[in-house]
Length: 324
Image (cartoon, rainbow, N blue to C red):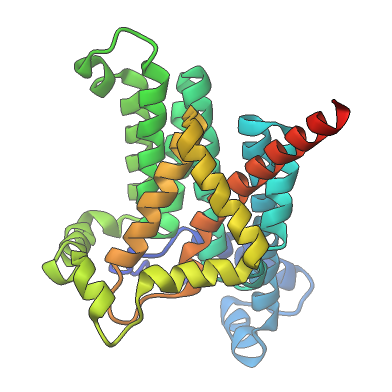
């Protein structure tokens, strides 16, 4: 559709990933053209209609690579925040997560958006640690790409703002300095520019989507719980998260969340605040039919990191006790 000149400006909830696929399919077209398999765009369309498996393989391979990269990002964040052992364990816990494995096979947006959220979280952590303007810009860049890939990812902007609060907390605290900080506004600007350039329909139809999200029926927690047409989503996503890990690992990851709430390091606050708000959002803003287990993947990413962190802490204590 994009190759034929249609941008579908009304479809603003999901995008971004199809721009990457468009580029890849463009290379596929050139490859077929050079080998003589096709001689025109019409032939290329005919290839798709007769046997689309080549397109599917390209898309599935891309998602698989992105899924593997997300495992690496779990390591990077875990190692950066809590030490190398925590990083390796976080990567392991995400690598064996059945929900993440399953959806890393499909040409859908949930694994790519999780990867982009992970990058935003990583650079948010760097903001809290160093406060460098380049990390503000990178967090804004990947936050904008995450949002254009799937609109609920806009909530990752919370991690950028929380990181900004952490970065400025050591200085003489003044509200106007916090809110009107140049790096923060540069981050917000690049976030907005990336979103509008890659998803221009947001300008035309964004307010309509926002109004539908904020309607009384959408934000009523009571409606979500008691509506007979859909399950209790608090338990629905909890059970799917648990099933993707198994009881022992899930208990360890939830223990990591509790431990994070006790320690409350800047990294803990950034990661847990995002995961909490995102989890509540996918529950409270769900309509009658749009709820799927894959929606919780960004939360599972954070759980894997916190699970790796507390497991590493237990291993350190055990090793220390044995040595004594």
